[in-house]
Length: 288
Image (spheres, rainbow, N blue to C red):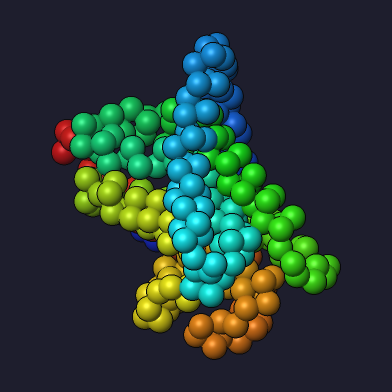
């Protein structure tokens, strides 16, 4: 196997090493998650109550939408089942990302108080440790709530369900989860420099999912362009959902873009991984 260069030089690692590291990181992530799940299930009544509380808190968002539709017939030209479809896909994808990697917003606190140093000395990838830290199983409440709304939308929608449209729904959920996860990681990397940027990260994660719950026709075209070409959150659900619902794109983009969410997800994850590596290399412990 080819030799690695020193840390001060440009690092070149054989492909096999990346595969080994990826496998090691996933195994470590799984072990840490399993530990926190066992800890959570030791107090099952507490878990049920917190999960139900999470379910109820997130359900208030959709209750607000229902209140709007009690006074209007459409929102931005979209009927209730169509808005419910946007809400369900956005909330479910974000809920899965928040469940899997939502602990990234604690990184800034670790950088400030120096507890990140304790993770650096362990023979486990830092990203796996931070992502699985205090894994909150109660966040399943958000996922369940979003899935129920999505289920209602799929039953209530009056559209021609072709094979492509049917397959587009799971593709949206998987790609959307990956895109939100990439935003979590990129936000965590930013905290290596800002150290107190959890709210900035939340603006793109929690704020992004709230934005995507509503039709793009409600927003200015400049904002729609921003979440399409700058921070590509529109690929979570707006762009593929417009195809599923048979709606026109407000920006007049080519229809081929509806098939790009998996590609965008891969690019976002690669960019977030690069940002994470740069941020980690720039980290200086509290003792320096």
